[in-house]
View 1: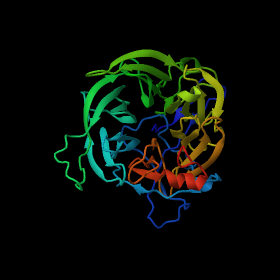
View 2 (view 1 turned 90 degrees about the vertical axis):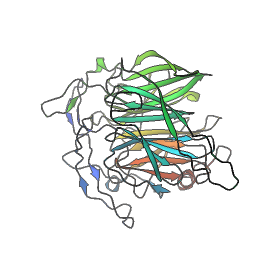
View 3 (view 1 turned 45 degrees about the vertical axis):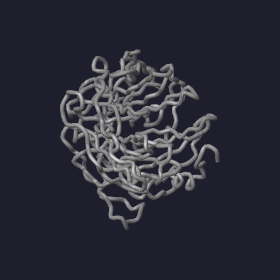
View 4 (view 1 turned 135 degrees about the vertical axis):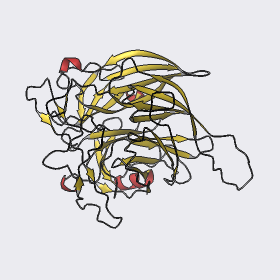
Length: 416
């Protein structure tokens, strides 16, 4: 998600961090997967986020990283729309079992909508503005049940949308159901607290009650080069905001539950990105993008306290980005976390319980990934689920979970 460099403050060795953001030039389908592509600078207007500028020495490439990984071919790659500046995906499983892929379009100020089984674009939703159903630089997105939660950086809020299908006109046997999603704005929240929000995680706390945790990459101004300055440690106690949503007829009732963030040198989040949680293990994983202190994943408890553990320090070499969780009822499963190499992104897999590193995979094309989404409930095309990853700010790639499991020796199903 974020794209501009950060001057790390509050550290003894404060230095300007060139936080790597050039776009990889797309390769022809027949090019070798590990060939190093040409790199073009990403200088889109309005892209003034905490890791925008590319390092002068060049972008990090998986082909040169030395990271052991397996290559997994994408099941599909959506058509490229660089004018949208695609950031993050999420999937809605409709009542008829169809998967619909929603992706935030930062420059397009809305949502791109695709068929989740084949990647065909079927529509878009929203336009620029601050009214309900309008967006300003949407980035993070999550789907919970029939609700979509969209983070808007420049409206400083999260917007809640109702997902549904139009009423069916016919139920004739053998006739394909061609209905596509319709969205309706329900509510917004966070305007009073959020400054520069990015990622979010949503869970059910009780029947009819949800909790949303949102990362906030507020900064302390800019230096003479126009680069963001990270706040001092003592001001990083609001890196994540917590909200409660009471569901019922009509709009959800939202209550702000407070903010949290560690302020120690070890546990602070200088440049926050994605966040995801695992209630079964009382765990939050938060992507830290700051290169000066080391990009990695911080482990917090659901109470908002740093657990004293950082995952992937030294393993992540580009930037830690999107996070997803494959989970089973017995507490087992896998974490997947993105390292944003510009040629091809690496997706690291960790054991759900122990957080032990189990391996990594990369696609043949998908690179420069911001957001990801793991859809564990299957479909006709993906009976054991699929993993979706944004490609180079302009498309979304899908991976069949069976292919990932086979390549890394993982379980394809919880019962296997």
